[in-house]
Length: 252
Image (cartoon, rainbow, N blue to C red; front, side):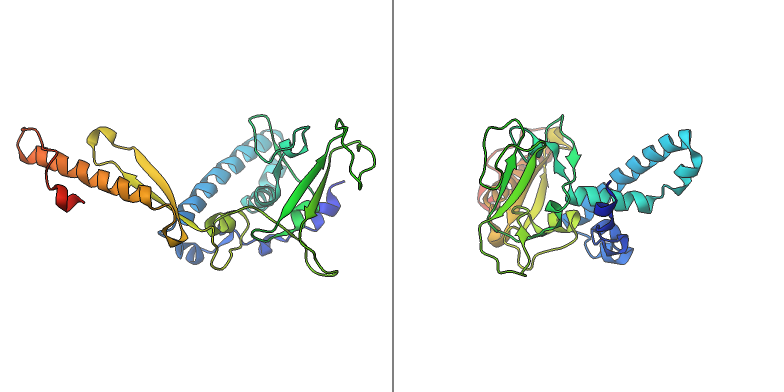
């Protein structure tokens, strides 16, 4: 039943997410948030694959031997890049996952490429709904989804969906493409605490292009410098209490 859908999915060698990069290609991303996120995803997926192989091995070792990491990576990439939460097909449609929701694939809907800021509406008609639309004269037997594009498109031109305001790191990790000069780009910054009592505690911020949202970062940097200076002042006093007034001008 699912054969026609599976047959139109891109071949494994055409997948471009970071888990399909060569070692040299991935190394180019060292020092970025994407590099660590890619390694985290690989560790998680490899653990899932090994769990699945253990289950298969207990039932059919021949199938387990043919269940390779490459096949699991391909299937996981299809699912992670194309699936929607099952809440989208509920009586109260939502794209937000819940503890009871699960991923579903929507053939056709997942074929549209991304266009940033493209105005798109998702119209979901549920069998229990009394609402009727001009293009749906009566409630369907199963939930139906229509993508309504609010910009005119000439016949023969590509139709686009809108994946949301995602930074390039998320687009590359999830889908394998990036947007030139993406206005939604961010960099994630972490600042550790200088206080020994707060060891292991980190604060994290996302800063956008043109330093959007950077103000809280500067405040955190100043707080960390003050805390470090107070700690060092206390140590230099050989047991004496540190002063809160140590180098206030230089700190600012």
